[in-house]
Image (cartoon, rainbow, N blue to C red; front, side, top):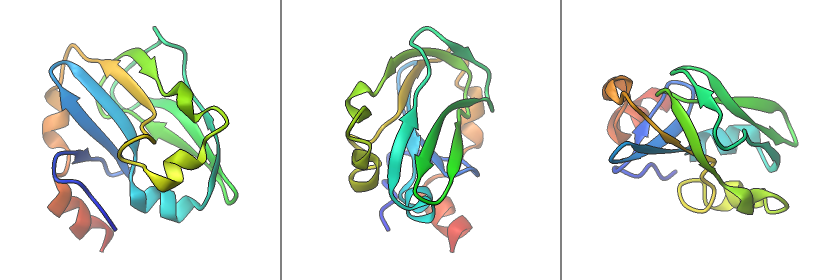
Length: 125
């Protein structure tokens, strides 16, 4: 299973990519594999604000519904509208085209506590 080194990982099996004050959020390949085929994604509204640790969206698979949590607080500045009708992109490319939301964060401090790829691999082993 792939876990890109450029990303940070949460205990809840989300990943983030940090670019300045913008954080892109998605679910890991491990989470996608555990859930099975993703068939629906419920995304938040652009402009919505979330605190660190809040559920920002839901992914529904053939097996279960799972909430996706943001490890950092911020305002949603983009959602991956390309997933509407193409939810299988999360299955095929969870770290690329399968991203879920982008947040503008005032405080990236909580990201320092996240796992790197090696620590995440050890967690799921």
